Length: 433
Image 1 (cartoon, helix red, strand yellow):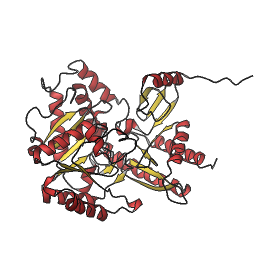
Image 2: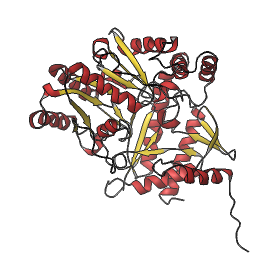
Image 3: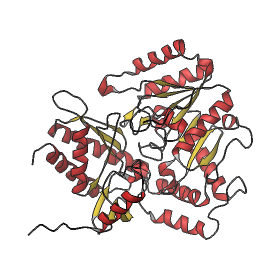
Image 4: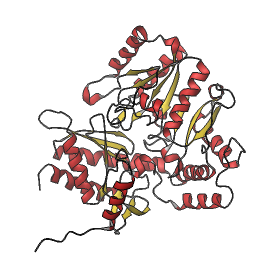
């Protein structure tokens, strides 16, 4: 008698997904979510998972936070959409005022809103070029800035983001990004910038340098504060704008509202998205008023940019971060996570290094004998964690870094449970059980 194979409701949905959705859209786990709350999700069969991906850094305040749900519900009964280019509405203006103060402090700023992080990046470049009247943009190896044409050009990873999608946008130049573990020093990167100015484009033709203060998809690599300050000094010297891409680092992920604050600098433009909307699609560019007014009327906008529902959610997110003291929680939970991951690194030689800032932590998985990146083992660890009820995803140039993006509202008991599962996953993937 042959064994019976149980077909779950998830299986049925995933079969429909395969037939209806192209393979280019990858789903990390064979899972279909029906319900979510805080740091937990449940599939169509009622199985519970700890969500340490958070929509890839979108849910710093957790799934379905009551304050966010209430704000969206209130807004839905008034205005759901109007298009800000047709008629203004209070939420857009109020959110702009709030972000201007949070980013600029004493510096006069303005904000414009869009829908995705890639849109924010593309418009930040437009603003920079419009203001400086210069064409060149400098980005970094390992950067991830989005999947649209210019954003994917700026992105410093060939696979899977570039494939055969070229030709790409012009006027983009690239530098190495500091990586202490791989012996790429900030001095090496700054020397590369000097060489770039001498060999490829003069400083007076560069509109902006765009940088993630902590690289996200590139492997959770923090830029040293001294490097950020050096870039700020160089850009100011040459009239180049400094754009900080805070799409993934923003809104408390690193322990401050924005990661650039930890370097004690003020960028010219800041891109925001992901956790700003608490699950609703909204992004933005915040910057010094003089620069933001570089483009002429009609040069900026988008049908859904700053949608009324998303603005309401974003204002509620900022309230929750303040009222629930989530910046302090990010520091506290991040310290605990970093410590426990270092303990696991002592136990499992395949963990080459632990790194991160605040609650934005990661481990790099390597071959213990050679130190070479081990992407297959990383995939096995993620699969083992999934089957034990923990959702994680990979990142890094070689896809060998496991990143932790749990909501900031994750409890200590949930964090301990997740680390226990990760321990078991490492044991299974490395053959210890």
